[in-house]
Amino acid sequence: MIYYIDGYNYLFSECEKDSSLSMNREQGLKRLYESFEPYNLNVVIVFDAYRTLDEVSRINYKKTEVVFTSFQQKADDYIIDAVSRSPNPSQLVAVTNDAFLAKEVQFLGGKTLSLKSFFLFLNKKEKRLKRDEKKNPCVSIDEELYRTIFEERFKDNNN
Image (cartoon, rainbow, N blue to C red):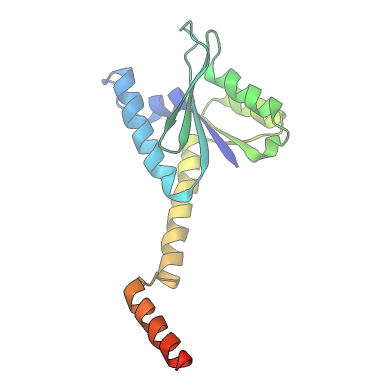
């Protein structure tokens, strides 16, 4: 699955209204990344940049692709275009509270989650991960110990 997150939709629902836009964007990206990073999800965060004269720009924030749309292109349009061009749109999920965007994505065969549903999904993954860790606790391996045991057995078998 590829999760396309409507960047400003997320920021305006989660971040402080008094802070600057760039500060909110940086803090929001950090919080958002930290929420899904443990689960190795393929995430693309899309921000409107349609008032600039630039082309689409992409940056990598850690392992996440962050897209700033091109001149006169909104994040909604970028996400809809990605779904419509996909050979397998059912593998794309738009994460947004925008009802129009959600309906368009669903019409094209993609999936949608509200921001609240996305974070509930992450919460369930976190609980499942913790439950699995309790069932199968990782045992730290002392490589030196195992190497010594191997070497001793190897010597015994060759003598």
